[in-house]
Image (cartoon, rainbow, N blue to C red):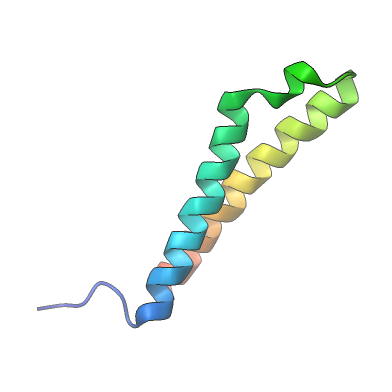
Length: 66
């Protein structure tokens, strides 16, 4: 039987990555920028949410493949 994870910290890293990605997606779905003023704030919030998703996916991938 082949183990999917090398040790317990791999599982923790993947879970943290998935959590960060879900928070980014939740921010995009929740659309918090509709309550703030200004176009620059909207662009920064969307950019930050997309970056959070990318960081979360990257962390999960990096932790699992290393």
